[in-house]
Length: 232
Image 1 (cartoon, rainbow, N blue to C red):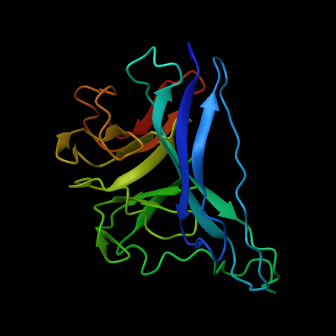
Image 2: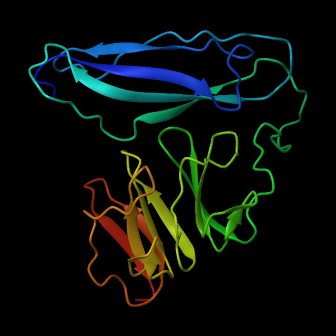
């Protein structure tokens, strides 16, 4: 909890929605009193009569500061970014079950996608056998924005060396992967690993030698424990 009041800077920026066309650009400072866990600000949406489908706006929080200066610094938890989805109120006259043209992953993945997981901020994680997503190197793991475009802020570097078959997302946005792999971004992880929201390997999650054969599914229990199923 908070021992004293802090301020946090917020800023909204373009996703697929464009400032000045779809929304009013905004930035400012939010103040949190001791014990306060949420705060609000208003974001102006610019309505038009175009049938554009759902569009996204990016929100970022940074620069936490103690109000009275008693602390040298304060820290933000993760994730400190979110994607806001603006639902279009114009009718596109598409029948139920038709392809959602507002979700456009471009060229998509160049090989099988085995698992899709929804993140708390509305983005998607995908894992599989691919090595590219929309023409960019993403070795078996990638993150997509809510509109299907590749989230270029998430880059796992060397990626995953073998197939990702299962994934579960924790409430804090960290992702637990399972599959055939033995290495994640150059670090030894035998068939199970956890990633932080920024894509870095979570060193606090240490499965030791891991599983000796492929893991086909992973489930997060309500008590935080992890259950894996496979050929090990």
